[in-house]
Each structure stands twice: as structure tokens, then as C-alpha cells.
Length: 174
Image (cartoon, rainbow, N blue to C red; front, side, top):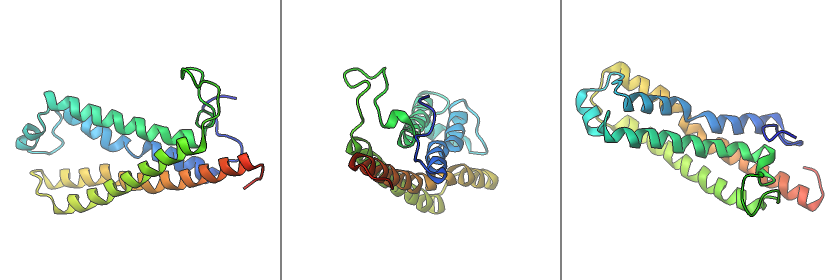
């Protein structure tokens, strides 16, 4: 079985939710990478200087984008084989079953953190004094809006993963 295929017994909604959780960071990540490369996207020069972009701040912007994508990508493990059995390239545990709690506890914490992040983003976005063209403020809102879905999507997939794996371990179907 390919490691990129969905595990049998995973409903379509869970697969879509996992892929959604993996992709919600792409728009804001591309925006941050653009800023790192010096594209202002309507932001004032003072805003770019505050970010130190382009420059050393670019490392932060690119690093944050990459980290968000890696964490988002991990949601796919909740519906794919590599989330149930450790891949061959993982030393010491390769080929062994992934303990249910080893996946669900970090995923549950991640869904809580990303939900709080989404709520804080909405709050700060409507209360910030960013120096940018009006269209740039709308652009930022549009590009970051999907991030609000990250926590709830991850939470739904995490609950399904836990129920499915626990039922499978107990020998019953969900």
C-alpha cells in the first residue's frame, strides 16, 4: 500500500478535512515568502523595515511558513498509513504500530493551539493599526482567513483517528 493512500475505513469527510488542515497555511505562507523576497504587497516601507524584510527577518518569515506547512502536513498522517505504522526511514521504530495516544495527544494539543491562534488572529486583525493600502489589508485578511479553519479541521480528524484506531484495537468497527 502506498504511504500516500488513505487508510481503509476513513470516510471522505475525514480525508478532505485532513487535506484541508494541511493546506490552510499555503496562502499566508506564500504571502510571507513574498514579503521575505521584498514584495511589499501594498505594505508601507515602515512595515517591511519592522519585519526586517528583505534581510534577516526573511529567515523568520520563510521559517515560519515552512514550520506551519510541516505541522499542517502532519494532519495527513491521521488518515494515511504512515500515521498508523512508522515509516521505514524512522530509526528504532520503523514498521511498528504508532501508539494511538502518540498521535492523538499532540494532534489534540495542536488543534487547541491553532484554534486559539485563529481566534487571536481574527481579534488582532480587526484591532491592528497596520500601515498599508486598503486593498493590502483586505488581501491579508483573505490570505490568513483559511488559518481560522486549521484548528477545527485538525480536531475533527483527530477525534475520528482516535475513535477509528481505538475501535480497530478493540476489534470493532465504527
